[in-house]
Length: 330
Image 1 (cartoon, helix red, strand yellow):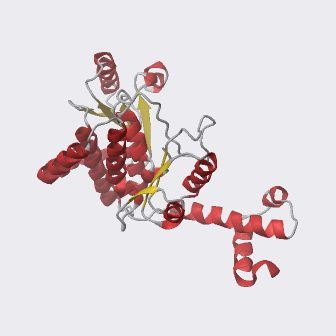
Image 2 (cartoon, rainbow, N blue to C red; image 1 turned 135 degrees about the vertical axis):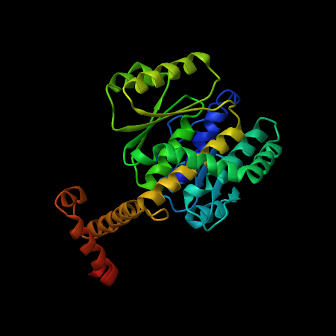
Image 3 (tube, helix red, strand yellow; image 1 turned 180 degrees about the horizontal axis):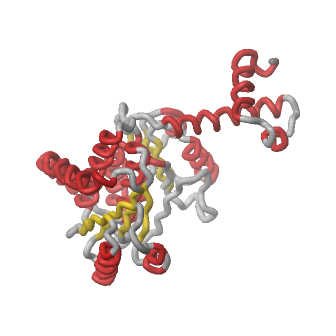
C-alpha cells in the first residue's frame, strides 16, 4: 500500500490492525519505489487525495510496468486519470478537504477491502463506528479538551508519544496533526523497543510533554509503561497516561478523533494556521522548479549535477520565470 502524509496514514493504521489477522504479508510504502519483491502477484493499493502526489504517481508507474493488480483511492488529479485510462477499480474520495482530514475514508475503504479479501464483511463494523460517532461527538470533544487542558501550561514543549505496537500508528497520526495543524514538534517511541535504548535518555526533568498511549493486550508491555510513567514522574515530568481498555477499529477511530481535537485546540491557543502548510507548499514549488531546471539543462546540454551545485534558490526562481516567459527558446 502506497501513500504519503494524510493519504498514507490510513494504510499504516490498516496494516497494524490486520497484523494478527491477515496471513499474507502487508507492506506500506511512503517513498518513490516499490520493494524489489513486488511482482504481478502483488496487489498494490495507492492513495493520493490530490491525485498529484509525485511519489505515489511514481509508484503507479512501477506497479503498472510490473503488471501488478491495482486499487486506487483518490479525489482526482493525475492518479484519477491514470486509473480511468487503465480501467482500474477506484474509490473516489469526497473532495473539499485537506488530505489529513480524510483518514476515515482511507482507513474505512482499506478495512473493507481487506475484509473482503479475508472473506469477511466489514461494512457493518464501519456502520457501527459511524453510529458511535454520531452519539458521542460531544463526549469525544470534551475528552480532547481535557487532554488539551492537561498540557495548556506546557504548550510549547515538544511532544513525545510513547506507544505500544497496537497504538503506534495512532501516535504517528497525532504527531502529524501536531506538526501540520499546531506547528509543534512531535515524536514517537514504541515499546518494548524504546526500553532497550531511548529510556536511557529520560534523565532529570525534560523539556517534553509525554503521552503514554497503550492497550492492555500484552501485560508485559503494560508493565513497561507502568515503570516508565513512574520513572518520569519521579523527576516531575509532564506525563499523561492513556491506557485504552479495548483495541478495536472503533477505539482506533475514537482515539484519533479525540487527539485530532487536541491538535486543533493547541493550534487555536497558539494562533497557528490550521489549514495552510506554507513550508510544505514551498518545498513542492522548489521541487517543481528543479524539474524546470532539469528540462532547461537538457535542452542546453548542461550537466545538471554540476550546475545545481552552484545555483541558489533565487537562480532557480529566475530560470523558472525565463522558461515561463519564453519557453526553451529563451
